Image (cartoon, rainbow over all chains, first blue to last red; front, side, top):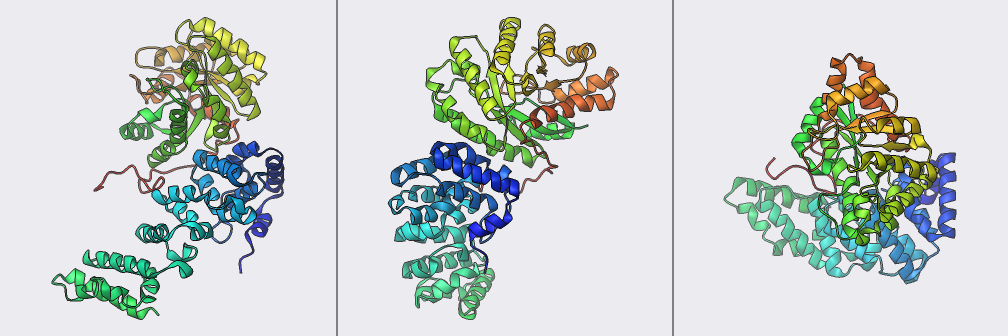
Length: 238
Length: 284
């Protein structure tokens, strides 16, 4: 099992980077406005490479800076919303990945970070969409919002195993949406991403209610071929 | 030949320019934030502009094999508009970014009290963030403006080697040379400075601390003026190493003082995306 993120970060940082981060955490603890200039500078001081579980070194270091903010509730939300507003994509992804940790440490933060999740879901940056769909989004997005987020991942080619809470939150309506999506792909003679099938299969009747099975007898050979491949994937991959 | 254009406003240029610049040897540029030809009326317009200088424009440049860095500041012309004064308050966030290699363009336009205030505060910010500064000199009353700029720079306590004083000419070069600051020259099609005049200045004053830029923007200007000046230097008998010093070594040394220049060899790649968007059009 991969070590927890803070431990992995400590192992990864050079002594110089660790000193910089320790000092930055102390400055942010003394004066929360210091985060506005240390947060953007993390990459060049601590590194930008991958760490564990889809986190980068910079993500983990930035999460530590946010955790050091001596702010709660609305004041905390205001500061991290501004960091997100003025942040480049690396800074924005770190804010998004930190949302669950901020709420864990301060229940009054609650759903105040949801607008940032929604902003990422409106964009086209797959890195940010993936970062937005962690445990915080799984807790706070309403049913419709969560389903559309999953569908957006399927459209953008983001593997669904990166989406938090799918086992608990996937429902019959999501299965219907995914089956309709699969039908649309098959009608265009295209492949269907395989990671949608476990959800469709978990809701008996969802596939049948879509027009996909009828594509097997389409007059167009590429539609018949796409339907055959999709149906085999649906029944095969238990 | 490799060229670093230390002052060019690529936001206003086309992809054809990027292609021609790459073909001419341009491999790195610095885009100073400046005004846009038409006044901005709010701080938010500036922050969107700064975001583009740090996001979309470096991405666009990289598609054509050119590395793009920027300088961030409230320019002197707009420092006179009270609606824009709040830009000074958001600058620290931007001066912390990886892509920012200097504070600039700062300096004087009409030498008003508002310009004095903005110049002084931004010199302080440069010292605080340990960044070099790019200083614009006024087009009108240039000699007096340049003299006053050098006085303010000296009083600010910033080391002169952290300062590049730009848009110089035959009448202002000596006072900047004596100050210890770096000297910048903008080569324009009709005004400011020509290739041949630039060559004569280099012959007279040497090539130390000398930078040549196109300052190409939305006005009549030529993004290949750096290459044309390099060719004029060779034709006048400068050797290749000296041309490389002026066109590459000096800008790398000046902006390298930021500790953030970190140049790498980028190859043109039109397949990459920025925030999920590309420079391509549908059907390509």
